[in-house]
Length: 330
Ligand SMILES: NC(=O)c1ccc[n+]([C@@H]2O[C@H](COP(=O)([O-])OP(=O)(O)OC[C@H]3O[C@@H](n4cnc5c(N)ncnc54)[C@H](O)[C@@H]3O)[C@@H](O)[C@H]2O)c1
Image (cartoon, rainbow, N blue to C red):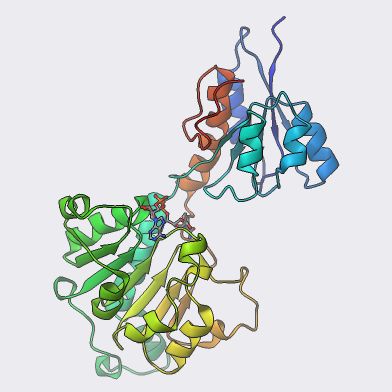
């Protein structure tokens, strides 16, 4: 009898694992049976034990450190539900000849839509009109004059998958789009009808600044006091990337002093945002609970793609979302 390829889901945040079970059942064959177990624990000794006895593990938040990887010489792949892989010691995995994979494109439409919805809602003053009308007033002049899309500009900080999709949508609507990304050349942007710009040019000139850089050492507080001071008083900042890219203390100051018109924040420096946090009290701030990624389709896709990474390895292939590409099949 063929030895089954053993997959363990270490932790997840779904109500059940039906999607994963169905996919495993549809790919299991007599030549290559695949067995799925669920641990649902962050207890290190249990994780070590599961990793030791698995060919593949799937994680949501569980830390997979050097010790665990060392104890699991047969582990072929760690697949993550999501983009960030900061909870996995990738260098140690590479040393242990264990592949690491993630799912980095399950919510490009959703996050770009969320940023677009923020921009359009700010441009059309939906939030203040709503507050005002509910209070019994009926006077469109009470609120700052809305913007015409073909006369307004959007600056994208970062030009990866999400802002590229956003730029497509913005172009159709008529916005002039600028982007800052030191790793993408001007010709590529030009083909997308986007103008390559510096952070300063974007902060000084754009009506909307949408943050999309990854959170790394170089981008920590990329938007600080200096950058906020450059912004136009009627400009908005939108953050669907990661909270610490904006210096929150500086942002609160800029908002309180009306140096900028408002902020749409899906992410904050501390999540969940503390219930007494000052950001919750400012009318010109629109908060969402790190929800930009969320839709029924994204929810399914993240799970399908995380399990497919391990199925591919069971089939002797490389996973689609392979991170440490120098590690090949064990
Ligand atoms: N709010 C949510 O629910 C949610 C969901 C998914 C992703 N995100 C965030 O959105 C961010 C963007 O996602 P993506 O799919 O477009 O990323 P991506 O990996 O496709 O692109 C990242 C881009 O950042 C650029 N970059 C790297 N270092 C940079 C630097 N120092 N300065 C400026 N640019 C730099 C890269 O050149 C690349 O073009 C992710 O990093 C993630 O934090 C949020």
